[in-house]
Length: 219
Image 1 (cartoon, rainbow, N blue to C red):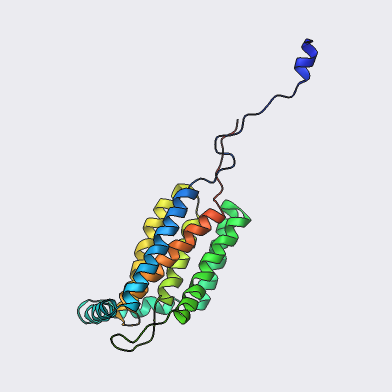
Image 2 (cartoon, helix red, strand yellow; image 1 turned 135 degrees about the horizontal axis):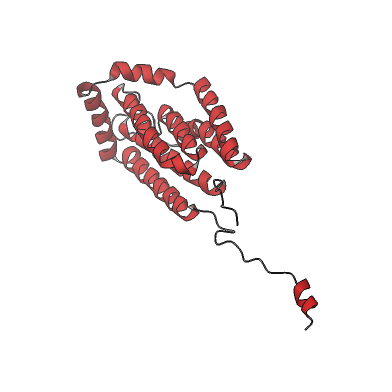
């Protein structure tokens, strides 16, 4: 074969090892499945069993009677409003747009703004049978869902390098919001826990649907 013919042949470019893959997608799907299963099991036990209803009610009353923080809880939950969620959604979506691009920004906005709506819909759909006290269903907590949705959106919006640190910062905030709803007897403990599990489920799915942007070193 002439040398010129060999020189003119196109050189095959080997694919990058991560090409076509979504980093962390498998782990995120497992996390979504586990948290969704946790939500279903918790809802079944706390809402549809006499033991669960009784324990949940007694736990709420005991926490409100024996643990501190009612004044701070009122102030904390007073900040949680539709306007605050909207503002947080816009800020986090812009952050995600700058860091990861438009697809991730849409996912972040959906998580932040959609969690309270989803919690509200589930609260209306889920039925609480009259097994103990005849009270209406309050699972999941809307206030906790709003805070958890913003927290999860924050984790999705930041660069991967600081995602772990961001998660460590927002988890105590979500726990505080959930505790506040219980100590004020707005919600039972299972309501707050279910809202957090719901946020993890939706956030993990958003991570799969809109993967983060990874910087690649130049060849």
